[in-house]
Length: 355
Ligand code: ATP
Image (tube, rainbow, N blue to C red; front, side, top):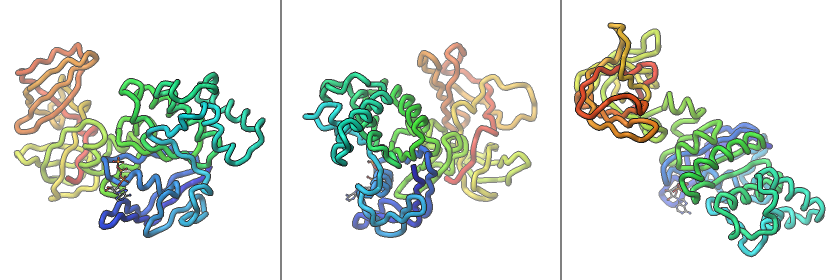
C-alpha cells in the first residue's frame, strides 16, 4: 500500500494538454475515481500513475519517493483493463498465475496464491477453464484476481465494467466496491460513468479538459458541485440562469435573480453578489405538496408538462415560467400532464454556482 501525489503534472500530446494537475493526493488505501467525459484526461492520469506514459512537467510521488523515472515494472502497480486482457490460450489458473510465474515464484507458492485470489473473487472452481468458457462478468473477476495475485501496492482500473451489459454492470459495481473496501489497497479507478464512480469511489476527481474541477467525496460532489459542469455531469440536474442578487445569509443561502426576474435561493458555492451564476436543482429538491409556512422560500406555481410512469417512480417534467425542471415522485402520486400545481424547491438542497 502506498500514497500517490501529483505536483504540477502536465502531459501534452502535440498541442493538446491531456492533463494539467496542480496538486492531487491519494491516501494509502483510498479508492479514488477519476471521472469525466471522453477526452478529459482521466486515462492519461491513470497511465501516468502506472508509469506507462512519461509526463512533460511536474512530479509524481509514491509516498515520499519520486517515481518520475521509475519504469512500470518497478512500481508494483497492477492494472485491470476494459477488455480484461486475459490470455485466451491459457487456463484461468495460468492467467492468474502469470505475474508470479514471470517472477519465478516456487510452484507451491503460486498454487496457494492463485487459490486464495480465486476464492476472493468468488470463483474458486474455474481454474481449469479457458477465458472463453466464462461469462463477461466472470472474466472481469479473473482479471481482478490476476491483478491481486502479485500483491500490488496500487490497483489501477481502466473502465473495467464498460464491456458488460447494463444489468451486470450495475451488479458488478457493488460487488467490486465491496471487494475493494475489504482489500484496502490504494486504488485509482477510471470511468466515464458517473453512477459507477459514485458507487466505487471514496473520492471523486471530476476532470474536464485535463484539469481537476472538483476533488471531493461523492455526496459532496452531488450536493455541492463546484460549478455547472460538475453539477451537470454528476446526476440529474435542472439549471436556471441568473445573477447573484444577495450575498449569503446566516444559513449560507444566496439569492439568485433569474433571467426572467424571479428570485431563487440556494447554497452559494464560490459566487458573490453581482456575479453571473446558475441554480442547480436536483429532482428530489422539488416538493409537490409544500407545507403551509407562508414565508417559505422558492415557492412557485408550476405546470406539469410530462408525467411518465417508470414503474417505481414517475418522471415529471415541469415548467415554472421559462424554467424547465425535472423531478421524480413516487409512482402512487397522482400528477398528470397539464395540471397546475404549487411547488417548493428546497433551498438548502440546491446550489448556486459559477455558470
Ligand atoms: P476516454 O474516456 O475517451 O478514454 P479520457 O478522459 O481517458 O477519454 P485521455 O485518453 O486521457 O482521455 O485523453 C486526453 C486527451 O489527450 C484527448 O484529447 C486525447 O485525444 C489526447 N490523447 C490521449 N492519448 C494520446 C496519444 N497517444 N496521442 C495523441 N493524443 C492523445
